[in-house]
Image (cartoon, rainbow, N blue to C red; front, side, top):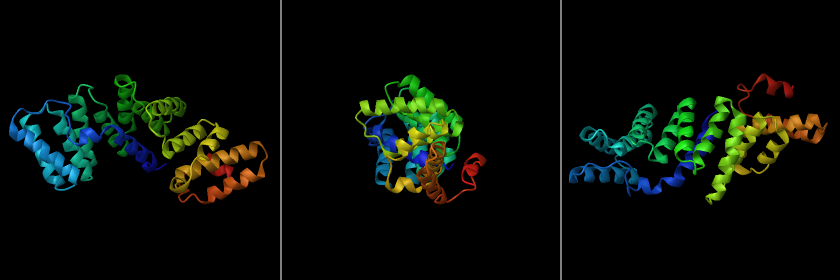
Length: 262
């Protein structure tokens, strides 16, 4: 399975808690107490907000690190400017240091480490950070959701489904509207757990652009044909075959999946 859909959802969820921080309204670690450092930090943030001179902003943050190697926010924003420059390996390294220096004070650092680790296929590292989110920020849905999303790749999908259901309740309690991508993840996890009727219900909540990707088509088609064959329902079987034919890349499909459509 390609990572892009799950990564998109992770990116969407990142945005909820980070606006104030990215506006430079506060720092996690103490900023060096001299005017030049404060001005450099503000200028770097302003460059990020304007999406201009990102390389220059990166240098400002690296210079701040040289001045004070304990200033975790400089590491974080150095990582962020590396990410904007598509230097994912460097971004992950600096995010990781920022999180280590912060002594578990912020969810934001752990979210970004986990996101970048997932983007690079380091799902065990991402899972570690999601478990830390659950431990240090149990009121947040993010750690629970992250466990669910990484379970698709790690393989413990029963655990993933359990955590997703907790995350959904926490999102609702927080007043955060559930995005369609959450139901996509739910449908995939239900399919992996052989709860095909329930997975169909999740997939049928979706519409529009999100239904035009292979993750949706593969799992929805598989659930449909399993229920269709179990109930001798030719209508569902034909619907499953129609969706199956729309899968653009069948080279990654398992033998179990392929055998259902022979």
